[in-house]
Image (tube, rainbow, N blue to C red; front, side, top):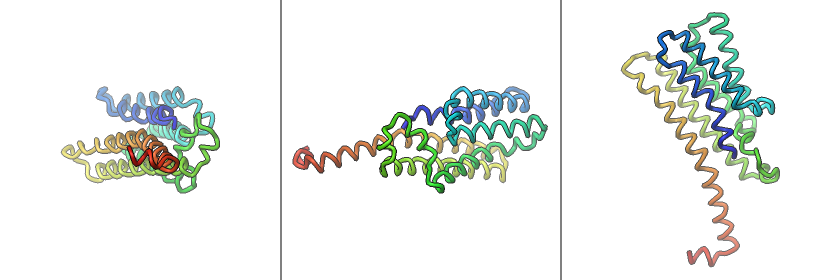
Amino acid sequence: MNLLSLLTAFVPWIAFALVAEAPLGNPQISLILAFVVAIALTLLTSYRQLIKGYILSVVSLAFFVVFFIVIVGLRQYYIANYLAASSMLLLAIVCWATILFHFPFTLQYSREGVDPERAKSALFIRVNYIITAVWAFAFTLGFGVDAFLMAYPSPSILFWDNLKWVFMVVAIIFTIWYPAYVHKEKVFQALTKYYPNVVKKA
C-alpha cells in the first residue's frame, strides 16, 4: 500500500480543521482561510489522484468547494456550525459505501506500484476491506462525538472533541501496522508449509 499517498489525502482535512479553529480574531476570516487552504492542499497533494478519479480525493475537493460556495459565496454562515459533524459523516458514508459496493477506497492507493496479479488476490483485497472498515469506524465514532457536542453544547465537555483525533491516530497506526503483520504471517505460513522442521527448531 502506498501509505504516503493515502495519508496525504487526509492532509487537507486536518489543515481545514486546524485553520478553522485557529484564534485569528475573526471566525469568518478563519473559515474562509481554512477553505482556501484546504482546496489548495487538495489540488497540490492529490492532483494525480483527482485526474485518476480517486474517490477520497474527488469527495474531498467537492466537499470544500461546495461548502465554500454555500457558506462564503451565499453567506450562509450558520452552516459552519455543522461542518465538523458533516465532514465526519461524509467520510464515514464514503468508507461504508465503498465497502458496500465491493470496492474499498484504500484499494486505489494500495494498488499503486503493485503487481496486477497480486492486487487481484483474495488476501490483498481482504486486507483493504479491513483497513477501510477501520477508517469507517473511526469516522463514524468521530461523527458521534461531534453530534453529541452539537446536541449538548457545553464548555465543560469540549475537551472530548479531541477524541475524534484519537480515532484518526488509531486508524493511521492500524493502516501502517496491519499490512506488515499480514505479510509476516504469510511468510511464516510459507515457511511452516515448506520447511516445517526448520520452523519447529526455531
